[in-house]
Length: 429
Image (cartoon, rainbow, N blue to C red; front, side, top):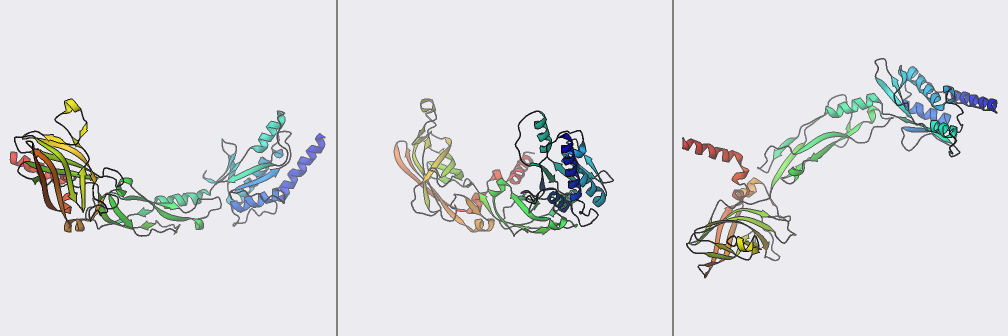
């Protein structure tokens, strides 16, 4: 029985060796991919093509059970290794070497560089182990899977081409508010992944652009169509895409440069912050309210008027009774005589069916270019219901602004603040 098995194995080994003799290893057009496919077809049954879903993987069925691992000639992996060794020596002028991971075998050139590598799975070895230890293993074909790696030269050329690409955008500022920031990052990206069969002629790329998240909420930008099919070239790829900054997105208005004033009260709206349009509170205002009289003033309600809408205060913070009420929100605020009160109030929109005019867009954002902002005027009004010394009174004042004057505050202009500090220092001298 042992002699019959030995004869069978030798016959199978000779058959496998004979099946690949017609491969011309010296053919300069024989690629590693084609060689592996031919070998897989030759060594597998007629009903098994050898190619798996991934075109870089090939499977060869082996039906024999291994009685010994001591003889490499009885190991189909050794048989495949010898065929790759022939291809490495005769076609590529190298030699095969194994890695520490015995599943990887590399064809190494004269300078020690890796020309290609091949991975074999260990399922036939596992089959022998299970068989020798008496464990059960399924009957039928056992497959040796060969996985090829990407050609090293092709990968190195592709990596170098992408790394050396020069993408230098030309920024065109139509907004007038651009601050020379980095708008986006650009890189060459592969149109499809590299395969073992990939050649330089197969290398295709496109330009991938990623806009910085905070830039997307600060500017409205656009760019010309970016190339989607870039071929590999030995020359360095250079491209200068045109990026247009069309508008600036503002999240606040700063009316505080002017004072709403009558005989008893002065009101400054330092900053106005639009909220999301679907929320109940659509505005928040930071205010300074000055009581110019020697009497107590109760502010019953406060409203802001601009852009075709009336915004009514939702709450008023009572500062004078903190000891009694804590930080409770009440419907009015008491202003002590000759006092300056700083408060933040929330506002809802009382208008129905009115548009936001030419100031706020559908997202409650202020989106403008500088030229338009400088030519846009805005009537901004503040109204309030007061009790001055117990007597009812009304407050209503309107100031006309140029929108550009309300978009940038001194806090957003560090250069301006620096100049002011220098002037004060000089005057102090």
